[in-house]
Image (cartoon, rainbow, N blue to C red; front, side, top):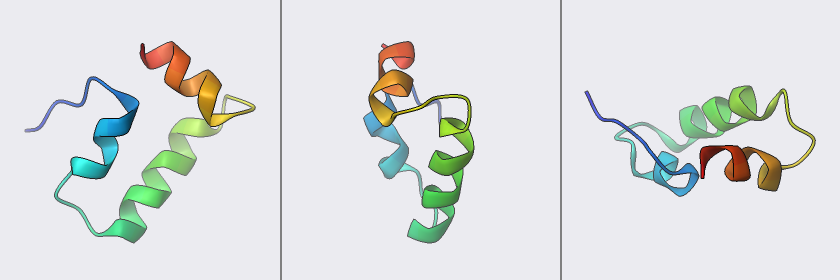
Length: 42
């Protein structure tokens, strides 16, 4: 299991790029911008 503690760490997951895009999209649903999501993760 790999634990991601920073928004920028999502790209380091050993997954296909298309799946990472889908994960980011799912995680961004409750936010208006990616910056808001990143702020929460900080």
